Image 1 (cartoon, rainbow, N blue to C red):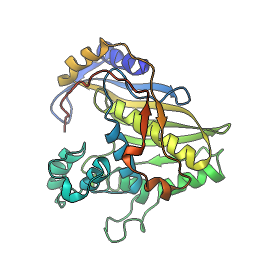
Image 2 (cartoon, one colour; image 1 turned 180 degrees about the vertical axis):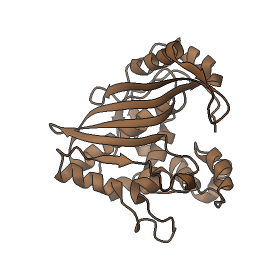
Image 3 (cartoon, rainbow, N blue to C red; image 1 turned 90 degrees about the vertical axis):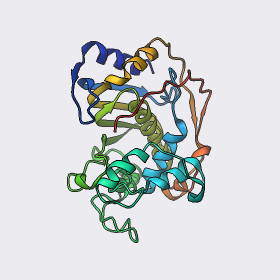
Image 4 (cartoon, rainbow, N blue to C red; image 1 turned 45 degrees about the vertical axis):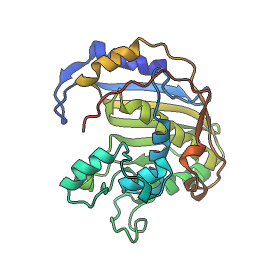
Amino acid sequence: MKQYLDALEHILENGEDVSDRTGVGTRSVFGYQMRFNLRDSFPAVTTKRLAWKSVVGELLWFLEGSRDERRLAEITFEKDRSELEGKNTIWTANANAQGKALGYLEGQLGPVYGHQWRNFNGHMHNSAPMLSGIDQITTIINQLKNDPDSRRIILSAWNPNQLAAMTLPPCHALAQFKVTNGKLSCQLYQRSADMFLGVPFNIASYSLLTHMLAQIAGLEVGDFVWSGGDCHIYQNHMDQVQQQLQRTPVKGPTLHMPTFSTLDELLSTTTSVYKLLDYDPMASIKAPMAV
C-alpha cells in the first residue's frame, strides 16, 4: 500500500486548500490513479487498521440491494435487529441526518448504492424491490460468463434520475470490469475521495468485489485500478495523515473467503467468514467523519 501513502504525500505537497460541502475544508487535487496487483496480496492498508468487518458487511449489503441502514447493522454485526440498540454503522449518521430531512422512515436511505446495483432506476416499493429496474450485478455476472471480451461490463451507481432522493449521492460512482486471458480486473472511478478515512475502505471493498465476481465466473483475479476525481484530505485530518506518513507499510495480507458459484450462494454467506490472513496492521488512527 505504498501507493496510498504516495497519494497522501502528493496531495499534501500539491493540493490546494478549498472549501467544501461539509464546511470543514479540504486540501484537494483533481485526478489521481493507483494500481494494485490482486494476485500478489490483498490491498488492505497496513499503516493503520482497516475496519475489515465493516468493509465486508457493507459490500454484502450493497449486493443484497438493501436501502435500510439497520439491515446493514444486522449483516455487519451478525445480530438480530432486536439486539442492535447502540450499534452504529458507517451509514448511521447519514440515515439520522439526511434521511430525516428527506422524510424517510428511521434507517431508510433512499435509492443509494445497493438499490442502483440491483434495481437501477427502479421504484422503491418495499413489497417488490427488484422488479422495476435493472439488476446490474446479475447482468455483469452473465457478461463475465458469456461475453468476457466485452468492453461494456459496467457497474454504475450514478443515476441522475434519483440523485435527489438519495441521502448521499454516490462517491464511488462507476466501475468497469475487464477480462484479460482469464483474469478479472476492475477499475473504479471515485468522483469524491476522502483520502484518509474513505479511500482505504473503498480500495478494499472493490478488491473484494473483484474476487467475488471472479470466483462466480470461474476466473482468476488481475488488477484493481483506483481512479479518483476530487481527491482530498479534510483539514481536521491533517495531523492524522502526518502520523500515518511516519509509518512504514508492511506486506499485505491474503484474502480467504468461502466457496460459492452463484450470486444466491454468495448472498447466503456471513461477514465473519471473510478473513484477511497474515494481516498485521499498525494501530488505528481515529479521525472524525465529515457529514
